[in-house]
Image (tube, rainbow over all chains, first blue to last red):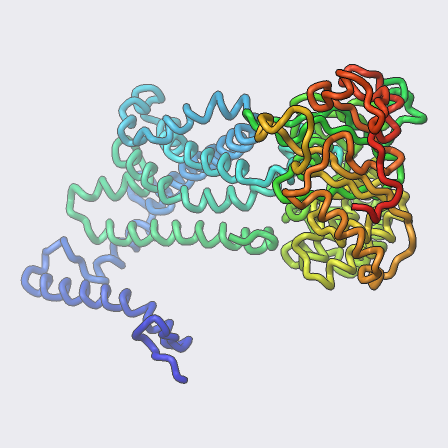
Amino acid sequence: MRLPGFFGVHASPSPRMRWVLALAPFVLLVAVYLTASHFRLKDNPDDKILPSVGQMVDAVDRLAFTRDERSGEFVMLQDTLSSLQRLTIGIGLSAVVGLLLGMNMALFPGMGITLIAMVTFISIIPPLAILPIIFISFGVDELAKVMLIFLGTFPLITRDIYGSVKAMPQEQLTKALTLGARELQLVYRVVLPQVMPRLIETVRLSLGGGWLFLIAAEAIASIDGLGYRIFLVRRYLAMDVIIPYVLWITFLGFFFDWSLRQILQRRYRWYQG
Amino acid sequence: MSAANDKSTAPRLHIENVYKRYGGRTVLDNIDLSVTKGELCIVVGPSGCGKSTLLRIVVGQEQTSAGDVMIDGEPVALPDASRGIVYQKYSLYPHLTALENVLLGKILEYPFYRRRSAIEAHRDEAMELLTRARIAEHAGKYPNELSGGMQQRVAIAQTLIKRPRIVLMDEPFGALDAGVREDMQVLLLELWEAYGMTVFFVTHDLEEAVYLGTRVLVLSQYYTDDRGPAAGPARGAKIVADHALPRRAMPTVAKSAPEFTELVMQIRHEGFDPAYLRHVRDFNLEHPDAFQTLTPEEDGHAVSGAESSSPSSPGRETSAPSPPGRNASSPSPPGRGLG
């Protein structure tokens, strides 16, 4: 029996059909935009809300491939490097702290009972609500931005690692002890290598929140960065800059996610799920 | 306790007056057990009787509510390398290959930065164990790439590399297909002979028990004692029968021999029949290592006066010294064909 190509629960689209279907919404979105942009610009060539592709290319050329007149730097490159530095330090710190805390809390009941309520409490505080406190406590420089990303992401990483180590069968821990493992060996040589892929998974999910906190922090107090730029040019309704920046951020996010997934698949062949 | 404390003559595993209670419920009720080196000791019992609890107590994963566990005369509590264990599942680490799983016990003897040299130094030993377990050709695979039977072969090799004084097995073949299970039983007997292992093996499969064991313990909550029916749920399982089996080289077809099936049926009767309640004095403890220390409440007659049918042995009371405990205190029937 031939299965339908699109309709019904038994649909089984051909490989080419899959590509067509997946691309269709994107093509549609671009088409709608271009049409709307075309008609708006026909009415008023100075309209800034829906810039044409040409205008966006000009803006990217100006920001990415021409040195800035005042600073002598490539603005978009500088923005990207600043933002990525904050994001990687913040998320990296979260990953390390979350891993160590979560693992030790799960394996040492004394530590777990002492800290789990606190970590849960912190994880429920909306990080943006304490943004003023962070800026007041840590100044308006790099530290505050990194702290916002860290505080926003580490509780969830900790709780996730805690949960997955707790879910490890007790048999595995007993087994390691019968193979002569001491307590610290159990933590760092039996459990740690097993939760590494889980950590990568959690970091992948936390990156979304990481970007959110990064851009929020840059929007409020910064002198460079992708979020700073978007909120700076917003004053001039410079959609020709904002749209390429948003696409660039999306691409970077996708790239990190893809890279982490590659690491998972190559280095952790045994890991499923 | 002199016998238990003297290292040269101490039994490999010695458990005396062990209780395990969860809240108000007693699971294990005054367990006395002594296992000699080299024994392949099987524990059977109805589901929920606490046989896995007993095993977890021996390995140290759970602690007794009262009473001690001794290995070679030394009290043990938390898990360590003196006792190896093979579980029904989760014995292997998913992030290590079969070879690395076997090597783990050796790798952990080295600092983390010398992992490579640990692997080099013990690779041959590990490969030999894998060869013995007939799984060497899959040494480089991860557990999720191995079938259940293959995983258990690796798990046994993994345990043996530490040369534990006793190997505990918790229904290790319970999840395997019948054919694979028989292969594994034969393999276990081979390894048991080759390495002179002492094995403490829990199963719910009576045929497996009688086929493998040199000794079969029946743990059951179906018995009576002088605490009366009021003791009801507060009463936990005891070892109600203790069979010595001759160790003969048996092909698996022996499972259909009449004396084999007869013993299986007898054990089913002794331990698995809720309507068949023997008194604690009359348990069928025929194995020479069997002993029983009853409390006065359990054995009212021993306190009130001697009874001819139950010669009160020194091991009768909790406080009594135990070396004599070697003899079965019950007048055990001579033949095991008796019901």
